[in-house]
Image 1 (cartoon, rainbow, N blue to C red):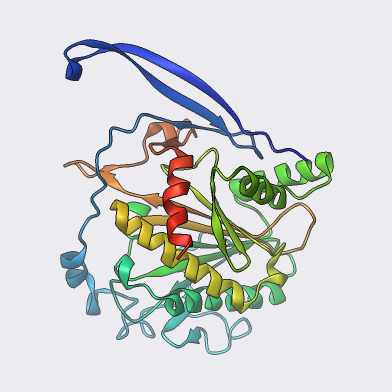
Image 2 (image 1 turned 180 degrees about the vertical axis):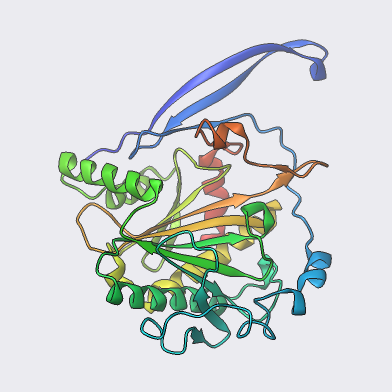
Length: 341
């Protein structure tokens, strides 16, 4: 069964004052997602280096008494679940604490405080810290699924540092569950079901197989998670991890260990290229089906220039057209080096 990777090239011609008025031609490549058909654009990369913001001083200003997630406040300034959902109101797993989101995004919405340390630099994350946090999120979702039979869609989401939309420096993740999907979840569910009906094969399984054979965007595997770079990225880079699990019921502690080890590899790559922030979304079908798979998307985030300009502009936000500075095939080769360690 074939997966189609479709792209369209456009060229813009102009006189470049930086090259003494030389007439040049610059390319934009429009790529189409092989599952959904949604487009994104590979645009010219000026080659400016990424420079991550140093949040050390801000961390000192916001820690302790000013942070509801710090140790002295976590059990007095965070809300609690009803006892019928979680006895005692919170889930505690060593330093990890799970509690309700005061301003929920969904029918079920927990916050997972990852550790005691207020500000964790990318190089300071450990595999146990990450795995334990996702394990705690898993335990919360188990409680939700057992208590609410209508739950059909779940996700675990990580906004790391302000460029990603994170509003508190203290590392934490969000867990969402509902009978209603987000736009992304609905789009993926419809498109993967259609692909399965037309091709009689799971799209995600076929994507991994095809990308591994092409060896253009395939990065590597950590245990039961296969990693690749998206053909049509949702950001300046876009990494997809496909789990060998179709639904929530198939996830185990081993998956969280593998995800944690994967994240350490990506964090090493981010540090090398000067990226200090990211968004992560782990999408989990609650009920097993033949067309979907548990999968994760990891998109680095940054600001640029003296204005600390956001990497998201009107193209992303209103045209719903992601922009990508780096050629996915080149990025995949660079990241793959960290997965061969």
